[in-house]
Image (tube, rainbow, N blue to C red; front, side, top):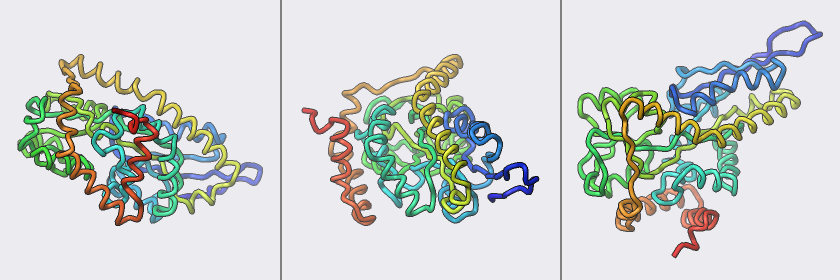
Length: 328
């Protein structure tokens, strides 16, 4: 997948790489990932050429494909790995990380460093940049605006923590590939889904699920741009330095441009008549009652122990970084 093109000796060699990604029109993830080729070409004076593809590998297989050397690069989601590596799913624990600002704070404090080690040790990958999908919202056919409304609703979820919470609330979590969501909404297989606000806008889910609600349940899902470690080590050091610098600039743009993408998606959906609803704190507190969230955390702690780390201590560290241990 990495090719050194034959060129005259007077010119430097050109490196060609393929970057696999998930098809996600209108989402910040897709827009930012698709900017990588131009940015890297500029940073390396054309010596590194990257082609993006959203059809090479299914989303859940991206990290494994990079690990195994089937593709040299990918823009993948932490959530896809949360069942095997619970630290990849901290933002799906209910009531812990409540928005993108808190996610960024925890990332910079220690979490992004932790997961960079996991990517390298377990997935033979180097992290070039981190980012997050637009805030996760609940698209539903019928309004879901109080705890009781979740009962018996069939909702597509994409991570084990939200699935556990839906079970506790009496809903019916349904795992579905992205390609099956629209047909499932049309046929009534599901009543709604949790997804990125921007992704739902691009896929026009609101045409079938007209209620768009912010419950702050697993509100953030991160993504990471990875490169296979062996491929990375074949790149000359000067080009690696240039790529790293440019990817850090990309990460900064992804962080500080995050809410602009959210606002744009909301404005365009509002122009189509979509009305947004934010769960009031008192209703969210009902859902975050220990009787509902304790099974979620217990399951996560159990998996953490199996993987080999102290889940309770990890959650407490996040709470301390966010000052939540000081709440009364």
